[in-house]
Amino acid sequence: MENLYTHQAANVRKTWFLMTVFLALIIGLGWVFAQASGNSAILYGAVIFSIFMNVASYWWSDKLVISMTGAKPAVRHEHFELFTTVENLAITAGLPMPKVFVVNDPAPNAFATGRNKEHAVVAVTTGLLSLLNKTELEGVIAHELSHIGNRDMLVSTVAVVLAGFIAILSDLFLRMTFWGGRNHDRDSRAGAIIAVIALIAAILAPIAATLMQLAISRKREFLADASGALLTRYPEGLASALKKIGSYPQPMKKANNTTAHLFISNPFGAHPGKFLVKLFMTHPPMEDRIKALMGDKPL
Image (cartoon, rainbow, N blue to C red; front, side, top):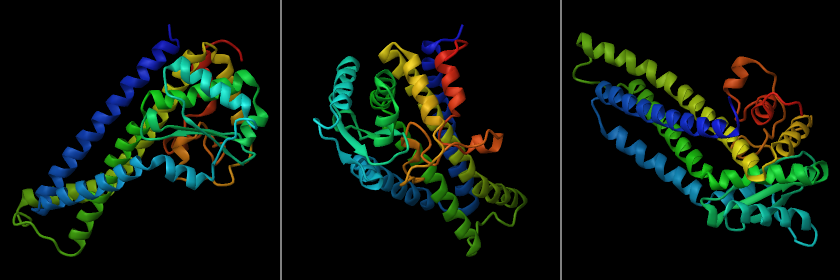
C-alpha cells in the first residue's frame, strides 16, 4: 500500500534513474559527435564552459535568486509567526536556521535557495502569509526546508550543468557542420551514417535534456512534499496549503523562467491538464501532489 514513506523512497530512486539516463545520453552524444566531427576538442571546450557557468550560478545562487525575485529580509517583530515557524521546524529537521526573506507579492508562493544548508534562504510572499493559516504555513515551510535537507539545489544544479552541456555541445556541432567541418570518413558509407545520426541527435538531444531536467525538478517537488509532510506529521496542512495556492488565478509580478523551478508552485499560474503541457511543466499538477499526500482520504 502506498504511503508517504514509499513516495519518498520512490522519488529518490526515480531521481537517480533520471540522472543516470542523463549521463548516458551525454556519453553517447559525445561519442557520436566526436566520431562525426573527428575533433574531440569540442567535448573539452563545452564541458569546461558549461561547468564554469553553472557552478558559478550555484555558488552565488542565493544572491542571484534574491535579486531576481525582489525578496527583502524579513523583520522579526513584523513577521514573528513566520520566524518562529521556520525556527521550530529547522530545529526539528536538524538544520541550521536559514535566512528568512519576504517577497512583496499578492500571489501565494514560497521558495528555498542556497548552495548548502549553512547558506540557505527561505522566502515567502506576502500573499502566502495573508492566505494561509498556521498549520498550512507550517506545511509550506516544512516543504521548503526539505528542499534544503534533500540538497535539491545541488541536484538541480547538476541537472542544469548536464542540460547546458548537451545544448552547448549540440550547438557547436551544428555550427561546425554548417561551416563545413569534415571527417576523413565522411565520404564512406559508415561515416555518412554517423554524420546523419549526429545531425539528428544534435537537434533532438537538447529537447530530451530539457525534458529530463524538468522531470527531475518535478520528482524533487514530490520528494519535498513527502519529506515536508513527514517533518510536520500532518500532511493535511501542506495539502490544504497547496489547494489554496493552486486555486489562486494570477501569476507573480516578477515571474521568471530562470527561477520558476525553485518555487513551491509555478509562478506563472495554473496550466491546463494536457499531456504535452505536463511534459514541459516545472511542477507536477497540484491535484497529483495533493493526491500523493492524502491518498484516498478526502481533504
